[in-house]
Figure 1: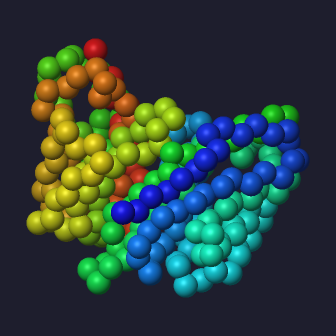
Figure 2: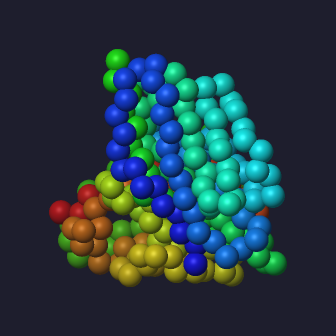
Length: 117
Length: 111
């Protein structure tokens, strides 16, 4: 069975602080995809990144960076120099891949990030 | 136009009523999903469909049913709504990797 754990329910930081959101996953599939989504207060779900299980290179996009470590089954998300606009709920998600294609997309419970001015 | 459109966006209904939430997508993907979001519980999968003839139960399917009318359409029904089905409902479609495109959500209140 697939499972995604986001142990941090809520995080509160002051603007310009760096913050890391943790994501630990479980899957028996050797091929899988990992995702991060952002849900701002307006409620929509915004795709941030997709990684496949064969690509462990860290990725940086502006102030956002992702650290994927298969050895610890983790896919952590860091925001550098946080801003108030980063305040949102962030979800980590996983889909395994079998011969028939990708399996269902499973989400963690989310981490609510509040960035205070 | 949005890639995934949900109707209605907001709905208040009475306990015991049957209600249908509709979803259509223009991405051309085969995979479609219905999720429910409650505060602190993240996104829970209700049903998912990998093609028109394929319907699968998710984690919390009791009290819900779905219909995949076409590749682009996937509707969710509450046969007899109850107050603890008050939640935010999301429809999504994904490509073969599972990368999902979400609708704007339907806020359902059962009184």
